[in-house]
Length: 417
Image (cartoon, rainbow, N blue to C red):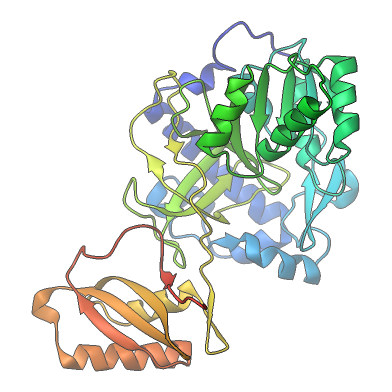
């Protein structure tokens, strides 16, 4: 157990960004080789890849993406972990089930989910008593925070969810000074305490996750004397990014490689543009390589004023899976990408789905240089759209850089009133 007296959890947080990048990409070939050797699914997914050559972002971007949305199918064929884990189920400390069901492993080592770093940045220290209101049932949320708090030498009350009156009573009795859980449940507890005329002013700090933290709610919680931070974590990857005292974006965890790609493709977007969060994890027991979270975000340019040097993201900006149903048929972002790939003249595109009183209509808006505009190109694109999507749609050629770079490949503007 490391003793902490610093503002930072460890020296990794203030590394020169160039050194961090070199260190991560020196570890990556070993991780890819390890995944190929010890995970049946990654042996297939990465067949023919020479791990020694994957030493930079360009090389990484050529590898196939594994989607969170594919896990149910993979695990159904090869339960419980879909052949992605590098250990047998009996070697794990815990096995979880998230809705789907999607099974997740927890290996036998301290702070497996890397939550201690986020808690530390939120001001949690040894000797704190943590009232932990994420569920301990089936899903890993409760254990993620619990293990991170234990790694910092905090005491934990495993409160879980629900039973609001008992939650308030235990806060009165135990006097915890810290809260972990969702922001909305903290609000419910505070409202219940007010209704019961109970003093819960012992709560001074909070780290929340699992849902958005709107500014209005942050202000409301700050107003009762609780210093609140948020983090972004998933059941597959553990802690991904966390908020520091600067409260400017979320800082990426040190054990991860982040890419932001155009939804439906594996292609990295320009820095600062919205796209899908893709994570490559250096976790040995569950070596997820180019794992698509299904979440949209963007890189926040520049460095955090708090002194941490890792890349920052803007937090959760929506879902990347913009699959939509048109005339009873699913249309996927990957299909839009497949249409564009057939026509090198197209610089960028989005599919707009609208409705005229009774019928669904699709319009593929394509950015094309003025010189390449032609009726022939429109016809060719309409044919490709019908071939790939099995649905008829119109094509509209627009000026280069005229479409918003907001992560949307399919924009559904239908209203049903």
